[in-house]
Image (cartoon, rainbow, N blue to C red):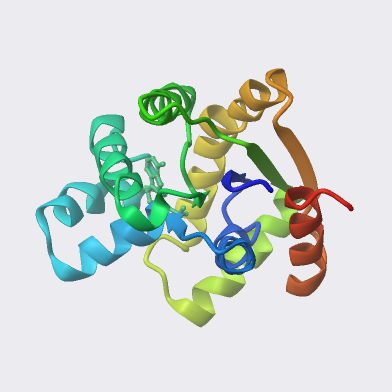
Length: 191
Ligand code: AMP
């Protein structure tokens, strides 16, 4: 069964929610770089202070900072048998770095799941989430910047996984349960 998974898709595609559900179903941790940054920001750690200004502007936190944080997290025992990565990698440099982290242990990414959702729907969902969760980076100008960063830096990485035959695109439109079933089916081969 597929256990080392990266979940791709634009901000607002439901990655965070789906990563948690899929991780539970597969018995592995969901690792969200955005959530780790937000946790550090709220606790006022050095990492949080470094990341905060980039997050508020909708920009990527520098690779050295992000890669080191992910390397630490993946080295923890609960990630030894697998993980769902949500929000990482986010550019081609991070793809290379993630490969290197895993290769050190003779491992590789089993599957990249691309949660596909129209960008018009994405903006609507994010604005709605802003009202519910009050996330500081869910204002319209920051949402537009995050989508621009996504198109420029993150979208191209699906090609890297496609070239290895590891990419599966999943329709992200539908109820949480519908999308969860599609993702699960992509991870667990039909018997
Ligand atoms: P997310 O919760 O995934 O939307 O991430 C929120 C913010 O955290 C992003 O807009 C970035 O500022 C930062 N962030 C999360 N993951 C990464 C990453 N892999 N590389 C750089 N910055 C990241």
